[in-house]
Image (cartoon, rainbow, N blue to C red; front, side, top):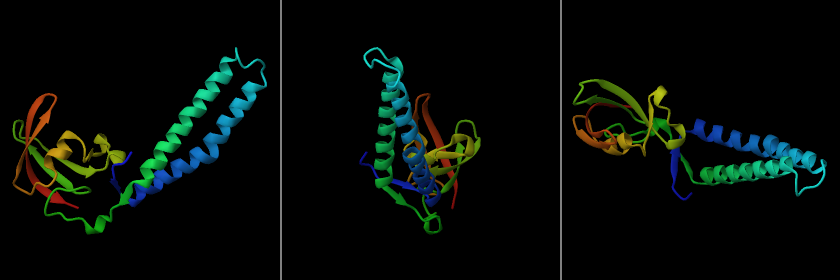
Length: 157
């Protein structure tokens, strides 16, 4: 993964602790599972051994992917966010021009996105469509259901 990701310090700390857990807890557990399966006899017909090896391979791939993500992370200081336009870590209040309903989203990285918490990814269709807009602008966003029009009502930190 070569794309730079912008995250908060808290998200970076969560990612580091997850990586630490995978290295210190999950990796030894996978090794023990392989050793236990190896003791059960012939490796050619040992499904438990094959499953343990596959599980270990998947864990190593997850570790490598997380290490790659962490290497490409840039931490954003939330106190220095420019709220004159929509950018990552800004809260944006939008009005759907068709339904006249208002919604407020916080624009975050992919790792932090959680729609139920009102956090949308900067790479989502809405996130991409409103990025760089200022209060009063209207954004036309191509969604699977068709073109959505949103008016930027407010931008805050």
